[in-house]
Amino acid sequence: MRVLVAFDGSNVSIKALLTGVKLARKFDAELQYIYVANIGDIFHHDLLGEAQFKGTIESLLEEGKDIKNLLDDRGKRAIEAAKLCLKNSGVNAKEIIRVGLPAEEIVKTAKEEDVDLLVLGINSRHPEITGSTVREIVDNSPSNILAVARNWATVIMK
Image (cartoon, rainbow, N blue to C red):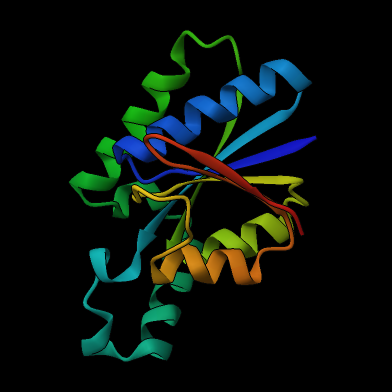
């Protein structure tokens, strides 16, 4: 079983990652987590235009630039928070860092990694799927989804 956790460093994404750790232990699953640096957080792509912006990112990657060096302070703190969550868990997790639009990159990675379960942290007090990013992931993900909030969790079977 392959589990992918979407992680942005927020409290609910920390809860989602810890849930992923529990699942990995219980089901001997392969755990991965993804942090997506929103393109607008790195460059002002609206000044360059979408095509030129994507070309710039692709060029940097082809030159062997480390994506982590492109992350802003928030991104670096999120990655460190994920590592701290995993440090004493006894679970090894693959770290995936992408640059782009979060929903698109999460769905694309779920497909590429052939993920069985995608774990998302959701900021909602009620068990309903709200927010454009979450809605886009739910609508387009090929994987089953476990949505985790502060006080509730729900499974969406595909």
